[in-house]
Image (cartoon, rainbow, N blue to C red; front, side):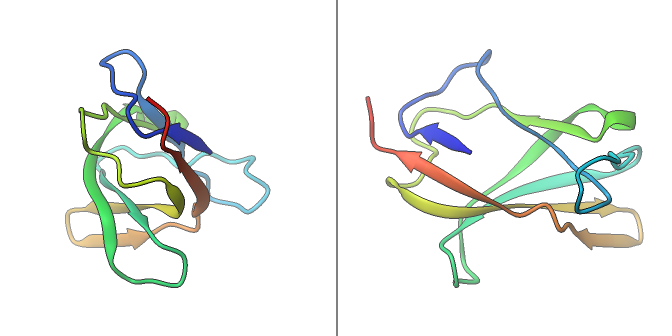
Length: 105
């Protein structure tokens, strides 16, 4: 996944789908969940980006986040991870992907 650091728009959102299997064939039903989108450096536990995302279609496992001006970290390679939260339950997903931020205007 690639994002241009200076891209921000209410129409060009950061989006994704949460799956329940490694084959990425079965979407997780996100009904009742909130989600946190996190970026960190590989081999690091600290976040450089930690935002609450919106669920687009709960039954399809899709989410989005509207990136604002100046929110993306410096150019580099990061790990994008989504944490799911539901009353009484906190889940860390296996949906971790390599995320490239490019320093283009």
